[in-house]
Structures are given as C-alpha cells and as structure tokens.
Length: 544
Image (cartoon, rainbow, N blue to C red; front, top):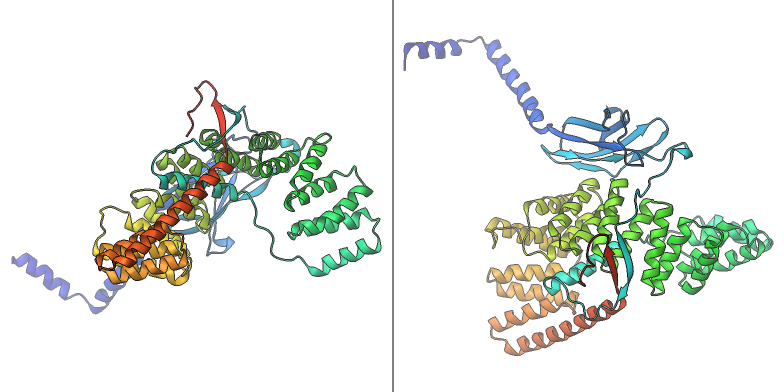
C-alpha cells in the first residue's frame, strides 16, 4: 500500500465526529430519493378526440392516484394534435378524465400503470353541452353485407375441438355482456306502494299507471308492469314513451310475438334507434337472426352509441361472422376508446377469426383500461385454456388479477394455468410450488371449481404423487360429474396402482360424458345458425 493511500485513509479516519455524522445523514437522505427516482419513472400519454374522432386541442386531462385526494392530482393540456403527456409516475391505479368548455366531463374506468411502464391511453371528450355540436357518426357504410343464414350441422371448425368449443363459448359470453343483469334490488317499497295506491284509487290516471309500470320494469318485474302499462296505453294510445315501455315489458316477460307487433307499430310513426334495437332483441329470441342483425344495424346507423354498436357487433359474432364483427368493434373502439366491453368484443372477434395474438393484445388492453374489472381477465383466462402455451404478457396480467382480487377463485386458478403453460415446460420446482398454492387456494375459495381440481390432479400426476392426484380428480368429478377429462385422468391413475375395475368404471363415465357433451354442442350449433356474408371487393368467405 502506498504512502499516499495510507495518508488518505488516515485523513478520513481523523474526520471530526460531526463530519462523519453529517456524511451518514446525507447518505440516508439520498437513498430514498434515489429509490423514488427509480420507481417514479413511468409515463402516461395519449390523444384526446371529440365525438367525430378529430383531435381535441386545448382539452384538459386530469390525472389522480386512486388512493390520493383530488388536490394531489395533476393536469395536462392537449397540444394542437390533441396529445397529452404525464411523466414521473409511480406504479399504481389512477383516475383519468377530460374536461373542455362546451363539453361534459368524460371519465373512464381506473387505469393501472406498472413500474417503469410507458402507457398510452386515448380519450374521448364527453357529450357536447350544445345539442347542435353533433354526435359520433359511423362515418361510412360498412364494408360487408349480411345476406342470409345457413345450417351449421355440416360445418367444421379450425383447430382442435377444444379450440372450436372455446370460440363458441367466448362468442356467447361476449353477447351476454350486452345484457344487463336483472335488478335484484327492490326499489323503495314505499314509492311502489304509493304508486300502487294511486293507480288503485284512480285507475283512469295515465300518469299513475305509467309511472308504476316504469318502476316495475326497473325492478325486474316486467310481468307485473304489463297490466298497468296496457291500461295507460288505452288511456293515451298516442304516447310514445308508454308504448315503448309496454313493448319492452312484453319483451322482458318473454311475450316476444306481442313485443314484436308493438315495436313494429311504433316504427310506423317513430323511426327511433331504441325501437330498432328492441326489435333486434325480440327477433333474435324469435329465431330470426337475419332480421335481428338488420335491426341492430339500423339502430347503430340512427344512433352510433356504444350500446347499439356493441349489440350489432356481438350479434354478428354470435352467428359466426367474425370479419364483419371485427369491423364493427373496431369502429366502436375508435369512437369509444374507454369502453372495456368494446375491446373485449374486438378480442373475441379476433379469436374467432383465428388471430390469437391480436385477441390476446386486445384483452390485455381491456384489462389495463379497467384493472379492477374481472371481465377482461376472465376472457383472457378462457382463451388461455385453448392455447398450448402461455407468455410473460399473459402471466403479468393474470398475476395482477390475482393480486387485485385475492378472494376470487378464478383469479387464482387462471394465474396458476398461465404459470403452468409458461415455457420452459415442465415448470421448475419453485414455479410448481407456486402453482400448487394457487390451485389449492382457488379450491379453498370455491370447492365447486372443478377445473382447478382437475389442474391440481394433473400437477400431482406429473410429479408422480398418485394418491394426491387421485384425491384431486375425485374432488373434480364430485364438483362436476360431467367433466369428462377428470374421469379419463382418474382412470389412468387407477390403472397405475392396479385398480383395474375402478379404471374401467371411470372410462365408462368418461365415454358417457363425451357423448353428452357432443350432443349438447351439436344441439347448440343447430340453435345458432351461421350468417352468410360478403365483404366488399373480396370473395365470399368459405364456411367455417
């Protein structure tokens, strides 16, 4: 060691005590700042557009961490191209909305921003306060024509039967997103009793009968509403609002033929989007999907709202017309970029078209747009079950689902499946331990989740833990006796330990399950005919 080095070390040791304490305090103060600097380097940017899709210059974008007060938020102004930007953000969930003179404020679902992430979120201004400012337009004629329907009994599918069934299942679940759940919460009983009393005391009162009918529809009591709305209709047959409510009540009560007649009568004098949309719902129930899709299209042309565009796209998807559905959902996503279900619909249509990567991208975008909404994750998980492998992107989204919803059994299950299918396969010991923990937690939260029991059995079987595998498979078939794969795998386990009689019985049950499943699928394919459609300037697509 040289003298100069020794001299420098000696000088350092001779620092006054105050100087050493000062250095330590400086380091301690600097470390958190460095840590914050490392964490707070995420960014958020995007474009704000008006209802016509044009960039909105001079709009104000408000950003607020979900766990903070409004006073701690930030704002940014859009430039001449309608673009905004926030940087120095930390990981978390943020609230985001736009404001601009002449427009209502426009809020979107909470946005999740990961560490070091550069996220892009486009926004749309709220409804113009001036009615003459115009509404969103579909811009141009659709590039497709739906010409008819065909029986699906002779149609095949692309890929394995699992993939085909998954596509059909996802299509049906996409449609269900457009149907609000019945209102199970009773309205203020005092209000209902008061309206009933008024209608009883003064049966000739149009107002009393109409208001009571409206309230009963909102409560999910459509059948109860019909007599009061019918009486109001006799008192004032020219009243549009009551006539529409009567058609709606009959549709909700399952009186589809009456609802159709009433809706068509309304259209003769009131060519309104809501009537066309209602008629589309009724025609679908009456087994005329071609007329249904025409009514949905007309509703969207008259009023290209999020609801009417979504109903149109989901009807196309339900009847095996993925390319037209993609066109409608793409336009809907452009007009309503903060609509989670529009992104889900676009993902489902892409999956039905065989564009799996595009489907995954859209569902991931939907989960980022509304991190607290389970729907995008559940669709992503169902899609994953038909995929041979997972990916880090899918794992990250389903990890977030399980983190945000630790008490959700499906969140734990789908995260486990994503980890299981992630290369390299088979998983290493640490990943296997994590997967087992997630599956056991899923079953603890929901013992009836047969798919989790089946996956747990597969995990034990791969590890050579045959008694544990048998127990898991037994739990799966107890939760769902029609789960054919669980019976089949249980038979293999019984064969491994020499219990051939039990193995034969499980194989017999497996064969019965497969037969019933095939019959169910065949029946459903009969019930859901396929649209025959043509794309402009392209040859007609072959049947899928």
